[in-house]
Image (tube, rainbow, N blue to C red; front, side, top):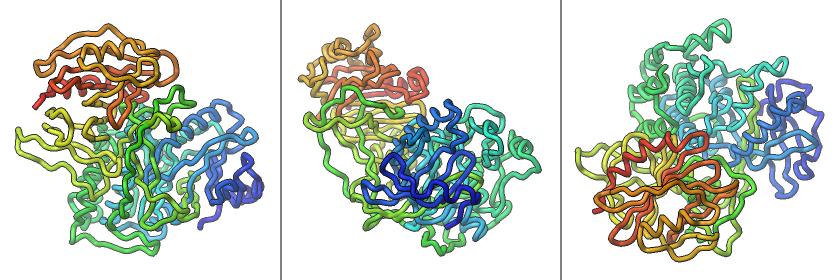
Amino acid sequence: MTEPTDPTLAAPDDGRLVDGRYRLGEVIGSGGMATVHRAFDTRLDRSVAIKLLRREVVADPDIAMRFRREALAATVLRHPNIVACLETGTDDGQPYLVMELIEGEDLTARLRRGGRLAPAEVARIGLDVARALGVAHVRGIVHRDVKPGNILLARDGRAMVTDFGIARLAADAEGAVPGTTLGSVHYFSPEQAKGATTTAASDVYSLGLVLFESLAGQRAWSGDTTAHLASARIDAPAPSPRAIRPEVPAALDAVVTRALDPDPARRYPNGNAMAAALEPLVAHPDPSSPTVVTDTAMLVAAAPFAPPLRPEPVLRAPRQAPARRAPRAIAGPLVVLLIVASVVAGALLVATLPGGDGGAVAVASPSPRPTRAPAATVRPTPTARPTPRPTPTLVATPATTPRPTPRPAGVAADLCEPFLGFACGLDAGTYEPSTFAPPIRFALGDGWSVVVSEPDIIVLGRDAGMLTIAGRVSAVYPSGDPVAAPGSARALAEAFINADGVAAGKPAERRIDKRKATVVDLSPIGPARVALFGTADQTYYLEPDGTTRVVVVDGKDGPLVIAVEPVDGSTLEAVLSAAESVIDSLRFR
């Protein structure tokens, strides 16, 4: 384990009890923004890592507020390839994050110790990181600081991403605190270098730089000053690791060079899309590519851990007013509980490491974990305690999940199946969900993924928002309690419009596949989410601070409900064009 670089940070807080619960141990990571301590959770008898915002930064109330807000965003990200943020709070005016600990090392340490990595290992690391980024991207979270120091290589074989949610804070604070530096200019995207808005494609570029360095044994760009480093990549052609290291497989080289395209529109649009490109390379590595087995037990191109069983759905009652709503990334309304996956038999290992490039990072450990699925869908039930706004999360599928394959023109395909609740990407084309009722067909353009695919509900997600299709609608919530749903499209639309706590635009009539349909824009009145309708297994909620377009279509077996909702930070208009294309293509079979 690497020791802190600043010896003055090593002892002052040792033994302190944070928030009456977490006993601080030694400092195991430090940076310009925060220090990371090993700690012991006295309530749950487990070792954790605690990241404390440094005292000199806390003095800025805006930065402290941003830390708390972004930390809350980080707590919604649950995935086997993300270092979990377990809790956030403030102790004696000092904000903190509680994270799991990881036994292993960060990628910076791996590269310093062993130089460049085997291509098969790089592909595996890239796939894990792309999956993690995909989870954040669908929730509207851009990491902004993807670098080797924020990629942890756990001893169970996973690459894990850390420091979600505070990268923007670090960037905002850069230069505000004397003596601090961001330390990530080597991994800036061109748009970051220009000070332009960062998007999911910016994270893709940064990951491309990390993979380039891991393959070539050197960074893609060099320079004498940070300004030169940042500007060198603006409009520069994408570098090729194969040009430096000829044994890099052409397919892997193509993935890296596309990720490094200076034009964001030509890169993979998000982590899910990049993961889809890397999956076949990991599942079927080039036999001529050199491979290694490292001394930290990360097997090259190892198979994913054995999946745990998925829990049975449980029906819950709609919640009335969540204490705090997580960032919305998919058609909000479905309730999903993210459960951290167990690793093969068991327990998470415990340890923490400092991040390279000057960032403080935590690294986790094996404490016993439940053997349930990492992203299981949970349904609202009348007797259960309401859960915080948990929307289905778009996540890249593990390498064992079949991905869509090219098919002849005009031939419809079934939807891919989300793996343990993790979404799977779709190619452009025509689809006929085999289990959904009523039987339907629709066409998709690029950029869609399947978040949920069940007999009575389908959720499709993309960067700007999501589209939900629900059949067999059985309940509506006119006053917060479920009652039987009307049997016609017009009556069902009127039930939505007249529900308590709902503001509605003027309804309009249209035709979908020659069938009557009612279209109306809905949004909650006030800060609370509002239950709109239910199927046998799911409840759909309207989320505050946004508008949802609802289309109710008459079908021979009852109304079909379609809902279009933007992600946080987006607008209905941003997703509407792509969603309307799907709706216009809808056909009943």
